Length: 88
Image (cartoon, rainbow, N blue to C red; front, side, top):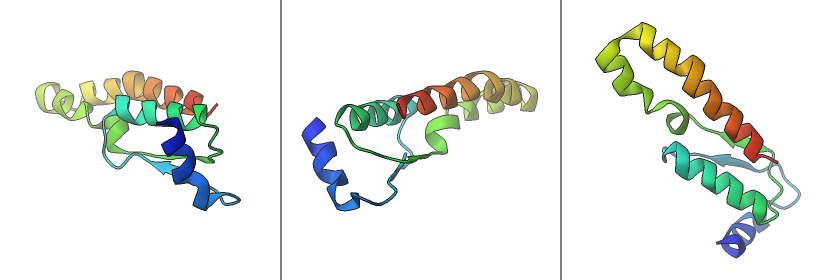
């Protein structure tokens, strides 16, 4: 897997490289960022949406806006901090 990450990033060498979550789960996206770092891929950052907040949809549906905002402020913010840490 490390070799695959390294080979996939090779065409971007010398350019800013940003990883896109592409709607995968938070856990899968975090693992991908960690693998890229372990493979020595120099990347500038990440872009994500659903990987960060999709688990909050049922919270909103079951408990409403206040619960959604609480989830985003707690779990969502913690996830964002974890992804930032994964940058190295």
